[in-house]
Length: 218
Image (cartoon, rainbow, N blue to C red; front, side, top):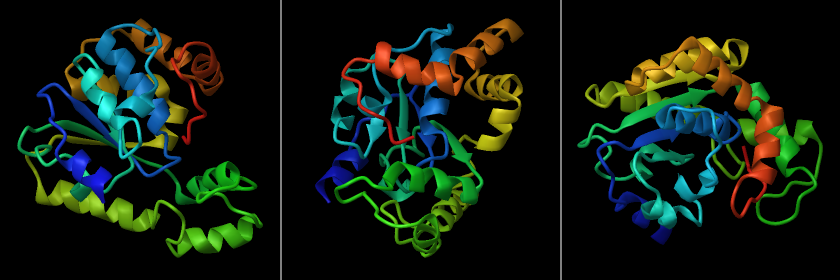
């Protein structure tokens, strides 16, 4: 597929950060947090994350973004830029309870039209999800693939986060991310970022701040 080949050939910068996640696992949420940490403030970037989302139609505009970039993707490791390991790009992998992933995914696609739409009950959708027959493939395979990547590439700096932990204790987990990135932050800054990245405020920011806003799939 041409888009995958283009992703694999993307020129990475030494200070890039990659966020990897299966859909509905908090990609947008984490992207905003990391972007704020690297900017050193709790202000929203005017650029939507789709521009830096590898595998999405707009990702080729990622070259327009100033450094340091926060890239993100739902793709398998083998489909990501070839220099990811060679350059030692810091990568954050976020997981979520698969039951919640399936519910969130169902709520997104149910009743919508097009190739990603679904008409039916949650029970029917869950069967498809468990069989890996949804648009993003098998959740378990995706997680196992990234676990294998960590094992096979010990020199690749990977931080594994859990959606539930980030939700339960955002400040603590934001500090963990900051330490991984080598960013110095105060407790107050972590609290400000946690507040700015609450779901209610992020939704408002998407609609009021983002350039060329489109409804996110996260």
